[in-house]
Image (cartoon, rainbow, N blue to C red; front, side, top):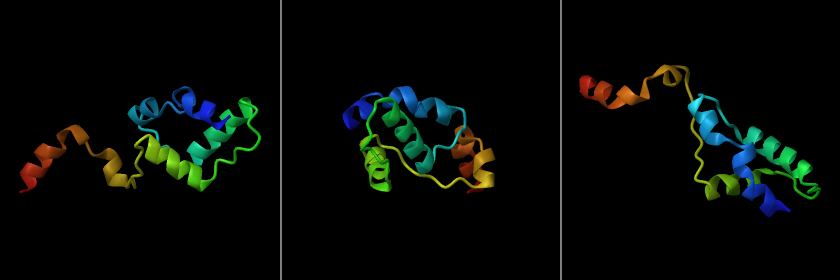
Length: 87
């Protein structure tokens, strides 16, 4: 059942660990992982379509960010200090 997929999201998503490791979790990755988990739960009707991904992100307060080359290397912990120095 789809509710089982949502209940077990922490086991297959591990978003916090992925984000801490600097990994990017795209909509395609979310959908693919959900489909893999649905398969393991014998949930044949689950499709993991864009609407499901969008609703999943809303339910779990996941945001989409565009990462640019310079942004990837920026030290986020020093961002406020850097901004003050620019002013």
